[in-house]
Length: 166
Image (tube, rainbow, N blue to C red; front, side):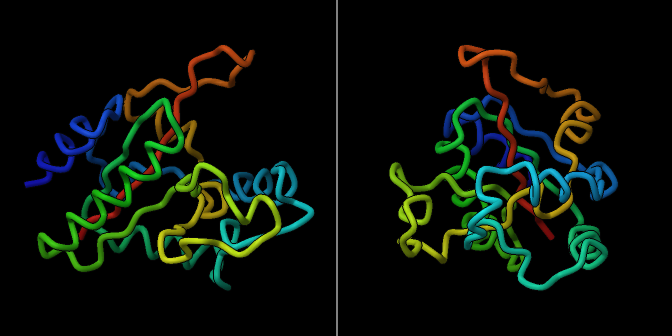
């Protein structure tokens, strides 16, 4: 049944998708450090950066409560945001009522939040992997997927999102 979501990701133009067990997702508190002090939004936290009052331990426990996790790989951030939410929706409709995406929001072409306004689609915002405490580099590499620090603007971007499936 989960192969359906891998195929769905590929049909939506994603570079790849793999199923992980919760233990395949690597957490590191330094991801939160990078989120809080290394992000362009550090001066003006917004809806895209919230942890909703949860601790790292609580977020780890939440993720570890799932049976399977779809790791979706793409080169385009906006397409990835749309894909993980659509897969989340499909998994929910398939009976996985706790299906949930983790992905920094890039839904809108011009983000109102980035310009200081209210979010146009707050129901589509999901937690960012770094704010969640996920080491995406270690997770992707352990899954055999490409990821590296970009050296120039023309380098191929490797973006990742998650869909938690119970």
